[in-house]
Amino acid sequence: MNQEINNYVGSRIRSIRKSKNMSIQQLADAISKSKACVSKYEKGEITIDIPTLFEISDVLEVPAERLIDYRRSKETGTAGSLHGTSPFFKAKKLYFYYIDGRFADIKDGIINIDNDSGKTVCPADFTIYIKTSHGFTSEIYYTGTVTYSDMLIRFSMQNQYNALEEDLLYIFNPLEYRNGTHGLLCGISSTDLVPCAFKCIVSPNPLPHDDQLKERLKFSRKEITQMKKMNMLTITNEF
Image (cartoon, rainbow, N blue to C red; front, side):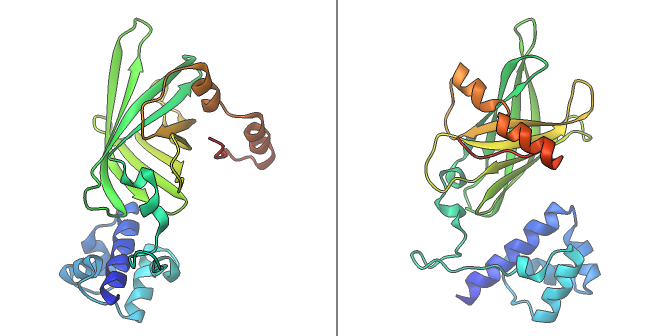
């Protein structure tokens, strides 16, 4: 039980630290610990005392509760995060789709996930396929990580050939099996280098490029109304 908690807290620290582009050495220096000590914290090899836990939360700029939100599953006896029951958590390959209104066509891609260890944060690569006006298909490659949580899954990817271009994809994490889930893809347009966001669908299986998919990829009237009211772009999960 204690080891499970140590592993969970360590993985939370590592995940948040990486999301802030902070190295182990930087975190170690900030809390006056050695790099080896912090590495053992993250691997769950050392139990973190309460004062140190609060020091780490201050450096990472998150509430301490976010590092220790461990829940024990009654059924499995393992760390109680629900993402383990999601088909998207187990998938090693996901297919995503979005519409770029400038070209009025569905664009698609593949996300390959290295999830053999079943960790909360896993390496992933991201390929977008773009069909040109001449009928040729080009590919854009990204590498990064996927982070799982109960409600959402986050993909953080950087263009392998253009460090300025980084995409962030958030999708709803369905707990039951379904053939797709909605998400929001944010990044920089490679065409005119402006910030942009697309409504997208991610699926564990390839989807046909038909009118039904195209309608699901368009912002609904409800979402547009909400955007005008809140001055904020959000989407609903009505797949």
